[in-house]
Length: 233
Image (cartoon, rainbow, N blue to C red; front, side, top):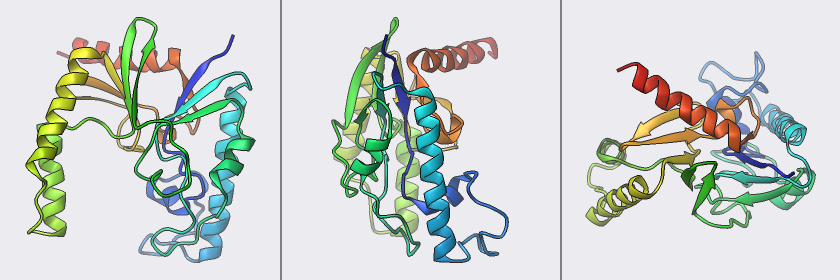
């Protein structure tokens, strides 16, 4: 019987993500006092090692007749912010991975040559219905934080009102029709969070031991978060 797996934010080829999120490839002496790579060669080597680890960990769990849904940011194209990166095509990486992979588009998947199947989807997992997209949904607090980040970069720039309205309508729709959200994007910031009244489960590798997790494991994470929140009241 085939199994459905979930993963996000692998960032294949992306050396910088290893240092941003503290992935195990970063060794003592790899970074200078400012937290930058000491050399492009080291960054290149660590990106190669990260690719090997991610492929190995995925293939240990996923069988050839399984399906894996990557919820965004599968890989990055070459260098990023002046740091050397790998120029391995996503198709070459996919050829090394077990199972059938479905890519939900993330912000890094726009220009990396990955063919995304969709930007979002709805799936049924056991008795639950899940909304799936790369970024978490945005509530009023999230919108205000976005505005603050934009103002810090450019005081004259404001997020258009239509975007706030669209995000509010999306949140209301998902909250009314689904039980949880499966997302990525936040890396190791959190594994579960309730946003706008609906629980989010982050299936990113940085909070899941660099492995995909299956349907049953997603539900265990979701139900535990909801139960602990209720018990803590």
